[in-house]
Image (tube, rainbow, N blue to C red):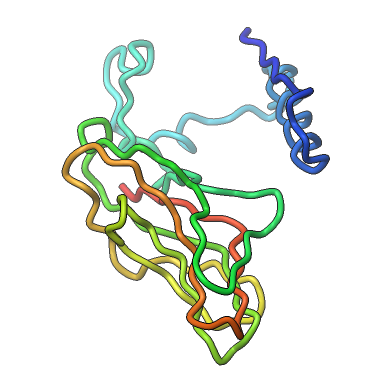
Length: 183
């Protein structure tokens, strides 16, 4: 069995330290006893899509699995990122169309505005080019997803997230951003 050994001494945030300790413990103690009722293959793999030794050969395509959405986290800061102008939130994700199967990609962000009079936005960017954005004027945390699939780059590109506020009278806040692959 694999063993996860996170260099926890490098983590400065107490909240992140607690999360990583829990993940490390969970993965390092994972075995068949964690699933006393078993897990049926029919709950994971679509019936009739696997033949021969596909699973043994580690060649099960995403479209054969029961899950239809696959999240790719871009940024999840330990505390919300805030601005009254514009700020790069990181989320450095190298998208290479040759490494991802055909399908649709959507952009999601957990964001809020300090003023219902102003719509704040989270943008998915390829360099300075805005691929798509989501916005809200809600003053409570809201997860917003693009209504249409994002037109992804046709060659390898580093994608980032930018949070913007249209006015110094409104604080824009972002707690998470992700890409969601839908097959």
